Image (cartoon, rainbow, N blue to C red; front, side, top):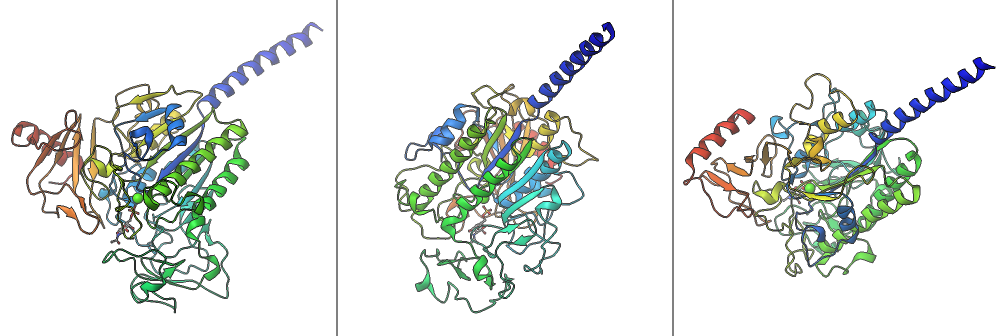
Length: 514
Ligand code: NG6
Ligand code: CA
């Protein structure tokens, strides 16, 4: 009798300790939803000071978590920023990480750690829903009608529902894991970025068929799909082609299905939205709602989408222990290829906030982007001015989840977990920012150290042609004090030659470039 009650006592204690450990572990193992906007600028959200547009759902998210004022992607365009986020390496260290065509091969190594692999290692279920733009398959020439791999599944995502590149590039189809969705084998897909394929009309020859005009000389005048001229040529796959007005809700539904199916175990969802990238073709319910043209309407659609995810988490009762990170892959742009009212209906809105430049630019508006981290169970609401970078999420999550990073992988990713969680104002000490329409290793680089920014002299073009954005290139050295001069208006290089020397030496050390 005594023995039995002793045993049951002991098992109670053991169970109690176990439950405590499990609970503690749970607390360190939130679900994580990383929401990536495409080309959203620092000033595009009302919680970041926008007055001409209201984004109530993101404002609510911001007020429940940490809103960062000095957060960065690595690069002022999409592919390199995403590469850095997923691999923990600066993209300019590797050839071929610039903006990719829609038929590019996968550029993420399959034998190295990635952000989703890290979560998998920690026992998470992982998914990728939305825009990809990191290449597919092991070569450019590929058969879109069979299994296309390697791709997201091979770099760490258990489940993947994507479009291959950007909304303005062919093939305009969704892919679920390795296959094109709704493909009719009797209508095979062919894609070509050099010569016309098939009989579909192209924008250049038939502008009268377009429901939204392409901007002159910007190249969005190849195959017309859903009344919109695209970059690249495509034939076949008629039933599989997306309808632009439905792309956003399609991604939302797929994201929600994944959350619903996996909400009882820890999951990591990389949810890459298409808004407000071109072509902006929001669903009918959002059209005309912002008064800022389709770009503004697309931002309302994006905000609503985030709100739908937040509601779902509440309904499932997992809102407290789910971390939502919301950010953007690069700065803002107005006319990026289509005549969609972004310029003419701007109405005084300032997408880049008080920063200079925009997408493609090494000036702050290229890489300084909105970044909100909400995790109600653990993180206290605040505004943080710590300098953080998306590339550091890999090392920071490795710390949070107690996972080691093999070999020397993700060597540029720094553990800044306390800054991400709002516990410390100390983020990165030094950051390299990449501007430019980089194809390959190119693009102008700048260095930021403790609020001093130095852009080495270069012979790049001063204004990005057609989109009309200052690039930040100059053959003079540029030095800005970001503490006093967020708008990078006063070049202090001549006044502080010692600082220029210090930063140019540090630049050389960090990048291996002169
Ligand atoms: C540019 C495209 C632009 C956009 C961008 C990629 C031209 C002239 N412009 O080259 O429309 O597609 O690439 O944007 O082709 S990103 O956000 O994916 O980097
Ligand atoms: Ca982008």
